[in-house]
Image (cartoon, rainbow, N blue to C red; front, top):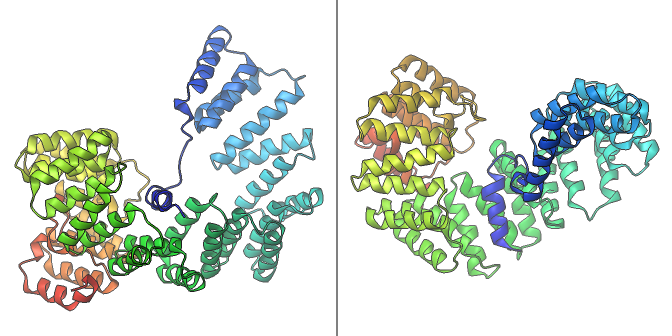
Length: 534
């Protein structure tokens, strides 16, 4: 197992959203084609074939708005006699509608496609899927059965019918159909991914976890996707994911991959002691070797406040590979925690030499400069990072804090906090990490901020205590210590074991610093010392 690739899959894939548009825009051939299409359309804006081809290219690049505009114009100018191109254009537009989740429009185009070509397998499948998404299960079932008539071994039909069976509360039939699909290609990871999705729909999360693990074990094609799904499931049912991985480990105790996945998920849930045990198992029993294991250990020890051990591990990781940009960022954080600010700055600079656009490195450099009383350069770094990621609420809060508290630029600070409130982001405002209420407080809108925090606490599934930790930060900064300590107790009880955040983090006025001199703080840290390994 290549742990380097697996680590990247988790860090860059499993803990993030699915990849968006393909990166073919930088492809010189694609750029040349687009340039040629543009020139041809400058000469004749009504050229239906060129519009169709450019629409297809926009679709391939994931720019569905431009693709739709072009294909609409293509159909407008296309000759009625050109049935073949019209069929292709309608199918392309239906694909665009499917990607935009405009299922009613997709069904309309697919009906037209099928009137021209009744045996079009892809169009039948797409219409069945669209009808399913519209809740028109009887019609969808008819189409899925038509697929079966065309191809008795159609897995698309079997899984489609299984999903409808779940909606009709016929779970036995759903299981039977899924198992039939698996029997057709048992050595292909995709079939287990699809069965897992049906099992999740049916509420069988344990079965889904088992299937994702089988998919990872079967081949590498779906490993990143399976890991993302496991991580997503762990957000709502951490115990069942860990139980599934533990069962896989019992069956294959020398498979380092399973220990690694379990450790990464445990680490993501702030269960650092469990993560450390699995990373150590891999290293000590020579199940695999990869410097990223030591980097992960460094992150865990840093979070637990065991900084010397963290430094030993990150130094080893840095020395073991040249591909160590992220490792220098981790070391910068450790050195800042050790109050070796010059070294923290040097490490951030090393990371930026390897990747000048790394926001993590820019933030590490800014915080090191701030600790060295160089707030002007810190502000410049954060401004550059903001240009890279204008929709990052944490970054905007950090920049606003520096502008307000260190640069004394209240107007610019206010603009940064307003950006958080107005931010167009995929993060729901009632997600604690939108920091929406923190920004409202900075803008003097305290009542709205308090209402936000109350709703976050009432509606969030705080599976590992992080939401209540953020609640403790909010109420600590608002000087409502009783509520802050209630949140702190709840967070610790749920296992939020980030000792550094509890005892040392002072960044961005999103911390519990105001609580640390209260006797209740020490009492709670002592009471839950076991989760920190103390």
